[in-house]
View 1 (cartoon, rainbow, N blue to C red):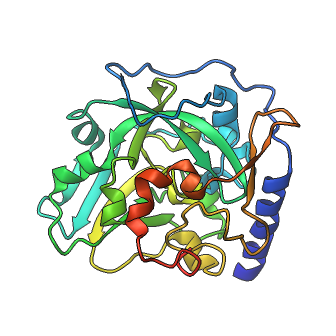
View 2 (tube, helix red, strand yellow; view 1 turned 90 degrees about the horizontal axis):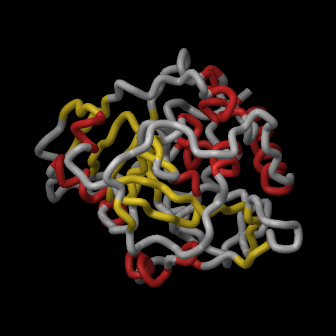
Length: 300
């Protein structure tokens, strides 16, 4: 049964890479939700034009709410993202259960316009609002034994109906090296287009690592663990040949079932949508030093 589910999902992923973007008729064209105050512009933003609110909020991979791209937009409408708590544990001096406001309110919110590259070979440009993950991590005071950061999504099938299907071993999990987690580009996003983060985009808080494929940017974070041992992400455990731990955007390393040399920009015209994929999604100058001496073909 697991094998059938995985093969079915493989077909969905391939179709998602090939089919054109369809916007549901009921989607709003204007940003919705509560406006976030005190948001500052970031010098780390790209100068590329962001995708529309429609593109970003109706074309999502979020299997906790369904396997079609527009399922999360429909199925996450009644998800209650507040109140919210995050369990922090492992190799740190300040473990505990932290409320959302305790994690976010001490920090200045920044707008970071980042490129997003999906492993399915499509891309967007997204104006996130959030705080550097490094700033949040310092609150927990990880010790010298913390080599990795392990994240888990909320596990609640009553609120996330997709978790009732055995597509993956729930809850969704992902991880970073401590160096990746502390890098200035790594963001905890709590908003989009200056508004609170929509449910379908990972409310109330999600990870954004712009030089990696999108599946690394885990949504609805409910647990953060500091570990000595490298964690295995959900997709890595399910299909390790296709989804490695590092998952850095690399046009020279194809996915076993499609090329990664080019990408399809969601929302672009037919003759403008195909673009060459950039190493590290265009952030090589800032992050390549993290992987000095590492074989990026073997460590995909």
